[in-house]
Image 1 (cartoon, rainbow, N blue to C red):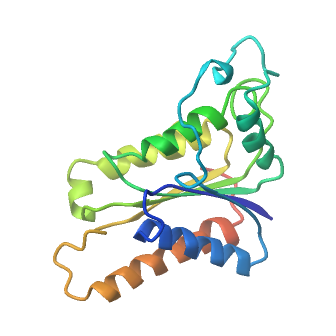
Image 2 (image 1 turned 120 degrees about the horizontal axis):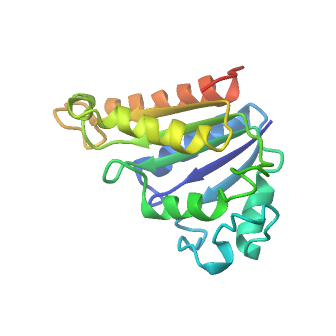
Amino acid sequence: MKTIVVWAHPREDSLTGKVASDAIDELQSLGHDLTVVDLYRSAFEPILREPDEPDWENLDKEYSPDVMEHIKEYGQADSVVFVFPVWWYSFPALMKGYVDRVWNHGYFYGGGRRIGFERVLWVALAGDTQEAFAKRNYDEMMERYLNVGIAQYCGAKHSEVEFLYNTLAEGVADMSFHVSSLRSQARRAVQRVVAFADVTSV
């Protein structure tokens, strides 16, 4: 199986970075063919400029060389894992730019869609608590946006958001145990959604 891991955080040694590393280790141990995209350290340009603007009349448009290289990586991919901190109840702008440019018309959506991955896992590290998210339905909003608005729209058969809540450790007495629990939760999500799941619907 081929899996693409895309992650974003300014600090490589952040909890987000550790969770991404755990996901990579887990998938490698299971024999997955991996492509890892570390957006902050890859010098990826997130701004969509004219060469990458969708052409609604041309399903075979060749985008910029950089984007076409990224698109080629998805040719045989079965799964995609995104790992990111939740900023303003979404993912970082750099990751949004990646989706804007790479998951582009004619390849990921539109009548000529030709990218056919099965599963998407969004691992979202949230500083706030689960209760705070649920109070205003931020969790449901993000799930609908990521699972339906992006993954399902681009043809994924199954998509899940795994929230790792309270990364700021409000009210946590044992920080080491808390961090370990969050990392274990992410590993289980990778196993469930990407490594072992045989799923057919979002």
